[in-house]
Length: 262
Image (cartoon, rainbow, N blue to C red; front, side, top):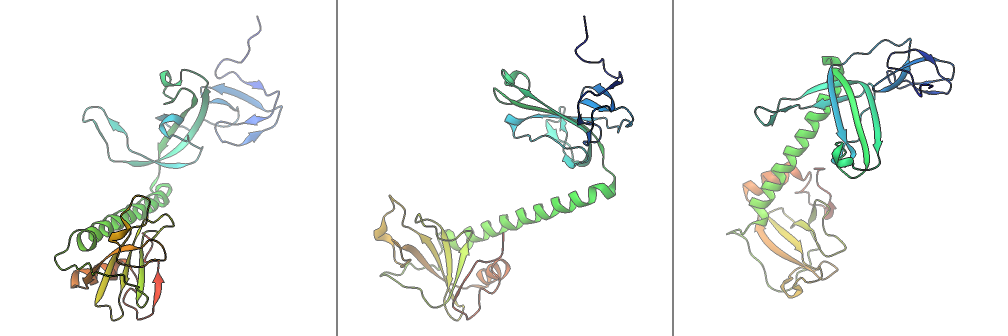
């Protein structure tokens, strides 16, 4: 009986073109190749090493790995039931296999999808540096967002003893408008701040124009159903918050300001 494929490590001549699983580069028909658990590779390419094994399924939001990719890895510690401190890895081998059925039994995380495997080694400091820099920037952005949201809640959104909800229907034309996130949406939601000329008073505006909202509570015109506006003095704490997160908030120019990117 003729074997359908060579045994692992046996060198053969490729009948068709393919991709080397040790380099990720294509090879033409006629190349001397061999096979292991990750697929076919050029026989003249040395083993790239790597003793750290990774696996994941597409149903668990895993997109697989690419040879040469530098990734952050936080291994799971079964004893402490927590993740150990992370470190950077360089992917040396990578493969994927499509599971057509019973994928939950194979680790796909769904009835069908891809099962990914990889080998990796610890990255050198030079290899890890760009990834670490990106992680630090991302963590800084997350912390900045957390401080913004906490400050917004404490200084503007929560019930404030010094806040006033003026009666009537106010048109806030003069001053500077600061968007919170995307600001007001076309669906009648979102929040904004409005700084009056002189930068001594700031309004917290909550768009109140969605279906089901009680529009009768609105006291600020928006061009739509309206918003609920709370008028607040610019205290030192609010001034510090606005200066940190909204560049030019106290400018005399009447304009809309997107605020800093969070």
